[in-house]
Picture 1 (tube, rainbow, N blue to C red):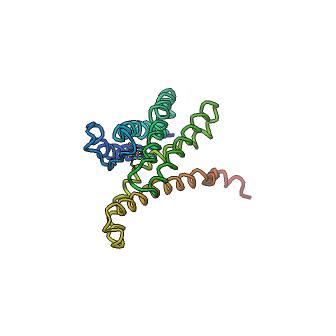
Picture 2 (tube, protein in one colour):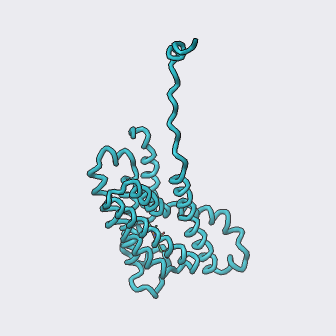
Picture 3 (cartoon, rainbow, N blue to C red):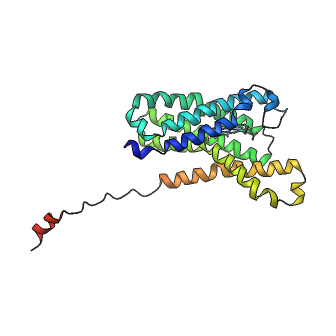
Length: 231
Ligand code: HEM
């Protein structure tokens, strides 16, 4: 893999940095009053679950970006293994476990809750499957599972982008029965963004993984070679 072919890492890192710069401050301030998630007293210490979740989630987002970068993988295989362990045990698995708890107690309604619980389980499962495949030296399977795992990690960014699209195009069209009720409005937006956020990227990733292999190009015969076989 030539360096020039894997330059897509830079826009990806840029997107991640912008997302983190917007998302982290309320939680890193360690001030529960600044949380963007409405309080749910059914989950004791909800804010601290969120803090742990966003810290592990950030490690997963940044570490995973390095892991899927083909150039780094080939140029620095030892670093790939080290960052890989960090991605799995210091990022994706604990972020998925805390995301699962937060999903069960979400204040954004049952539709968003079902999406977050399923996403957390899939994120945990794909990451574990990718790690186990690497331990068994099944590197083709490892790559496929880790691509799924990272697409689920990065789907948090698409989730937030859907939030913007829905606020602009769907919110003004809500029937008054929903629009006049702040909780129903929040549940509607939360339900849509959580489901759209990860299902579409995962389907696209599956389609990409299943794409037919490219046929090797047949070399064009040189004119002099053609000349020698032409009667
Ligand atoms: C992919 C699996 C993930 C799941 C299942 C998940 C689940 C959740 C849940 C349930 C919440 C609480 C909001 C609610 O009650 O609905 C939450 C909040 C949050 N998550 Fe995740 N999450 C995931 C990935 C990530 C990643 C990779 C990050 C990256 C840092 C992240 C950052 C955040 C942030 C910043 C919040 C607080 C809400 C906000 O301030 O916008 N999450 N997550």
